[in-house]
Length: 88
Image (cartoon, rainbow, N blue to C red; front, side, top):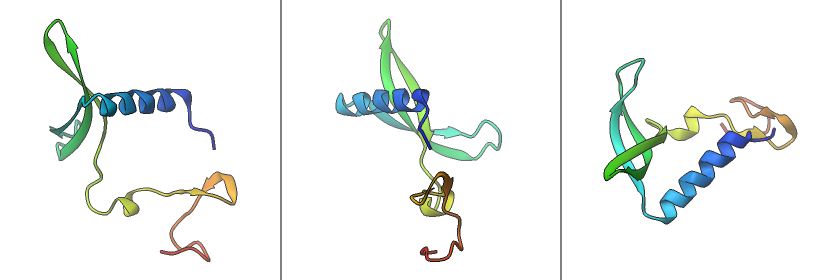
């Protein structure tokens, strides 16, 4: 599965911000649920003001429970819990 260009571009921006020391971790509220989220932001400047660009939030709890990894045997597939031969 190919990673789309917008995601690659955003990742490169995030890497540049990290290399320049321009990252921040901000406590925000989820716009839908109102739950607290800890958001990774790039920090920029605009006419002397700070500008925070959110890139994503840190996973709450065990991040391995939050995502399904790509399946190396199937370029378009993902490994689901309970897949034979895979660790839970």
